[in-house]
Image (tube, helix red, strand yellow):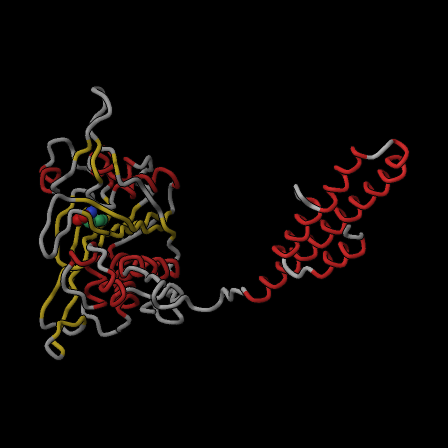
Length: 355
Ligand code: PHE
């Protein structure tokens, strides 16, 4: 018969969990040595059993304890080893093969937030599925207003017969009403986000991005609008030589209204921002219509404001040189690798918003 010391020695000598398991089975398994001893108790006469039983039970206990102690020691040694060898340095950049990039649209949104935060604006949001009140009516586009038809609106199936169909917002302007209603005046906000129009070719996609700007305060004039847009455009394109031109325009929710063009020139066969060889329109703007201020629940005799709405995808194309808008939404990994931005390159005014 195997003696206790040998068994305990074998337990102490096991240097892996699988080796320890072999020792355990040889002692306590179905045909293990201790199991055999326990079975032998049944064949003993009462006297011998009275002497042997306590010894055998004590042996089983010692072996069981030794096994448990060794198991815990081996497990914690294993954990130590893993902790030592499987160190992860979270500050290391991810390998090229697994690292994603920040989409130019997200990048430009971050740049806009950074530029306008510096001017004291905060960021407002609204739903993409919008009521006709916020998307049109409150913005001074009554039921039969031709602008409703002009916007190529997507309508959403109503949930029941009593509900007026909602729309996929055709612009970010409904956020003007929501922000004015919620926060009152004075108010300085931008609202970047997705908008939808039923339109698709090389320069139009059914979903695109806009940023809305809204200022409400006392004594706001067209001069404030002009200064703000000029400051924004120069900070965004990171050049001081940008030539701007205001053109009179019409939007139902602003009066007067103006579109902003910036000048471009040809440089090495490419159109670049700056100079005035030609013009391109980048945004619509104007002084908030008194009726719109009223629809926010504010008194237009006390509060005035300006607003603007600008296509973000267009801004990204101009700044970073892409020429097909549709590629923005194809999800082609090669395009994203080429035009995307590193996740850690957060735009800051001091470091350059271009990252
Ligand atoms: N919402 C207008 C558009 O989508 C842009 C705009 C916003 C014009 C705010 C004036 C003021 O075309």
